[in-house]
View 1: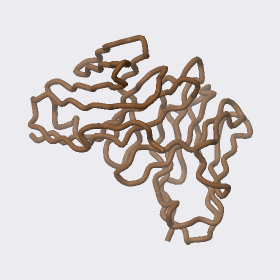
View 2: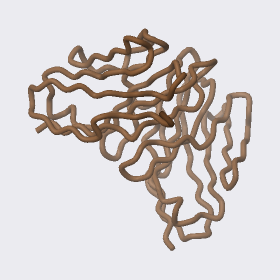
View 3: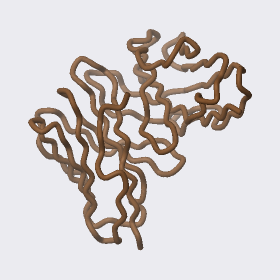
Length: 111
Length: 115
């Protein structure tokens, strides 16, 4: 079963605006990762944040991790139409060497 | 190859038939994962290989599902007596297998339709 929950399930914004997606999980983790999936395609890794990190940046992406609240957020700044995709968080729980994915957030950027 | 390759990209079969899905990981990657994704859902873990051995098969839904990786490279997911509920996209991913679960590199998936 999927143990991560993402919020919102769907998000529609105008090009140029910022998009924020949230992920919550239930048990202690080693790391948390964000992936992107274009319709009908495979998943592409975006960023990995470890349990002892609080924030990471990669280009227009900013990820935060709050282990006390068991939550993470992905911020995409200055969104573009090409950012339209589904975004998934995935967690590696302590003691497990596999990723458990959330349900995903479907992001639509309107030109 | 340059990326993870999965074949076939599409498979249509009839209920009760046997199906094999193949995954060719990135050369040198020792870890290989199978996931299943239904429409509108996130990937659901099936099985993880480290080298030739299945390190975690806790996600296989029942004994109709089986996966092998005999030489530590190519893997085959085998589904016996397919049911309509098995219809989904089956995703394969590989990683270096060093340390904790790092970045997974996914293939484009095999879409299975059971009529």
